[in-house]
Length: 371
Image (cartoon, rainbow, N blue to C red):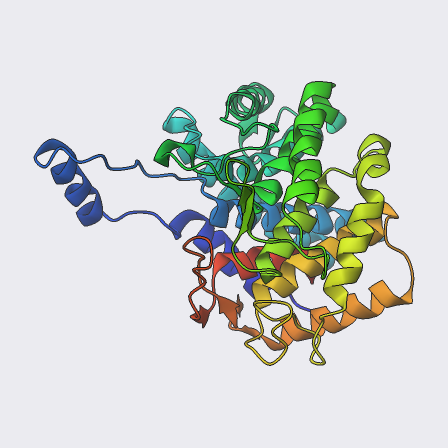
């Protein structure tokens, strides 16, 4: 599939999605100064754009591989790849540069997702010996990565050591979202800088969720749980919950240590999810709701897991290849003008899943990696 329209839109949304207008910022100022209300600051690396950054970096790596494999150094193919790589790099430089100028605020556990791409940039510099990637120097990247890791290490946890999703609000709940948002960054940070405590921190989140947040009958996750009352919350098999959990697990199996701990559980979860793949190749917003709306965000995230699992050697065989092919076709049918439609709206909390469907970053970002 031609990804250029998808890349164009992802570069645009990376810098525009969620950015407050001057009017909105003015209202926030009035609330703070005159009404004495607490107003959260603008989070410029929140998870929707973190997903876009990850998808764009994946495309950049694909383009670099295509250029390296081209036989004719002066071919149009190489020129086009270089131009597209430059477009992605400029967008990423502007995105992270804006965050650096704000003194790198890490406001939520969600922000760790954006750190994955920074790790990719840092690894490329170290491997290739270049002075900078996407306009960011090795020193800038290292400072940003260390800050993110330190914030994660200091993040409030429950009695088992799992991240509390919104502790500032007094909540004591663990959300499965946090696994896909934080664990790939933490594990890879531990790998790159040889910090075993970060590998363990990432794995602890997953092992705990598998112990406290799963449904025994379907082997699918609840949305979350609370150790203070021992209850599991949300619905069973929310499509993005499955996607977040698989994303976190795959991100922690990039080395033998993580694979040894997670491979069997990850394969079991993939198999449980594929049992609910629809005839059209997509996945429903709630996997078991076969006659309910399809959701391209769930399909994109699950297909990403299939791509990663096969690349890592965790998943092998026709079953997974056929499921990926069917899922890709479903995503392709949902693309219009470079956007991925039939995506469910943003979740508002446990059991609050608005049945609004459109084109959002959380379908576009994963599609860049899955297609």
